Image (tube, rainbow, N blue to C red; front, side, top):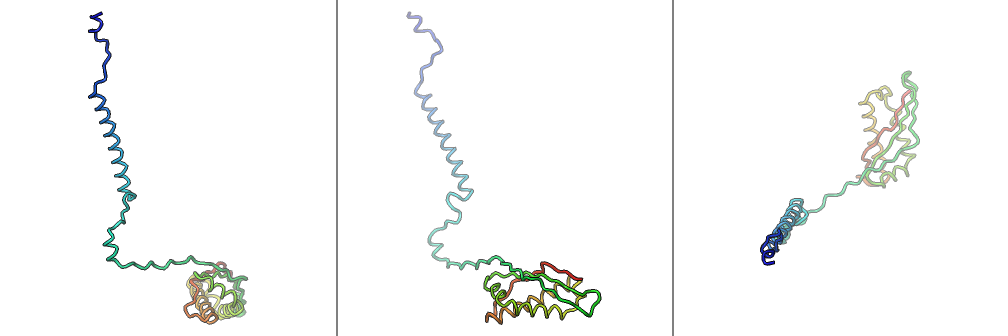
Length: 178
């Protein structure tokens, strides 16, 4: 039996140095993982925020006013379509124009709807006073659009009493010539 105790059967007893090295390896892996996570968060600007500045710098700077937020355009079709007859020209006898007005303030479009009889009268008179052959070119249509926008802005300013009340744009949504 004495010889059986001396035989090496492949069994190792856990030495205190091997368990310490295992703990050190695990702790090192955890520290490396934490460093990688915090490094990633830092470069992404999440930890700490990039715009964080000392309080002394904030006190020295004057607060900047925020720029005004531009409102989206609101569209209002001017129905029914504007139809004008031309008697002196054999090439163009009738023009039908559908117009949509665009503004950023609803009050302007409400004023247009409220004063629609004045608007329709002035627009029809303006169109009937034009040369219908000029409507065949893009430049002629663009010139008509500019004149119509100017006339509509004049009506809005007169009826609302506000000189700066104006449409942002008008669009031809239909244009038929016969």
